Image (cartoon, rainbow, N blue to C red; front, side):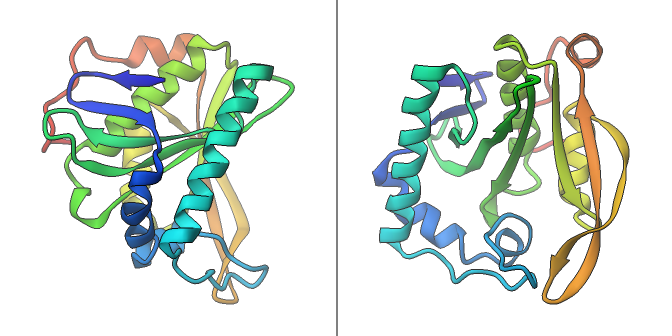
Length: 200
């Protein structure tokens, strides 16, 4: 399974990617906004290479389940720069409900941020989800994570509101912003040509 717009490619994770995933998991922003936390918001330790291999194995299991059931909950793509082949991040489907509502998320390695990868990946993933029959696609962004909120808006998502005190980090409560897209509305917003990488 591969998705591409000729500048960004989404492909399945491989165990060969485990070192990249492990190194990315130590980044403070990824630990803050994408990593696993306990109930008080304390982050889990960064992944070891073996931990990353186990996570990639779980993605593979989710892809096998998707092949059997048609429900893509738990599947994930590695994000690559198509021209260089550089691995830059991850995007994946967190959930797909019985009502065909899909939630996804994304993260980028520190040196890949601000170059348009996340926006392009979000558009590719959203189009794929709608092509599979999603009636609604949404994502959540912790208040204060302006970079991720900007990605959601550039990818054509509508800000729908804020869930107050919905998240916890290091013992303190934080609001969470809610962004969503509907198939026809979203498709009408998509430009014929996306800007080149390196621009918003």
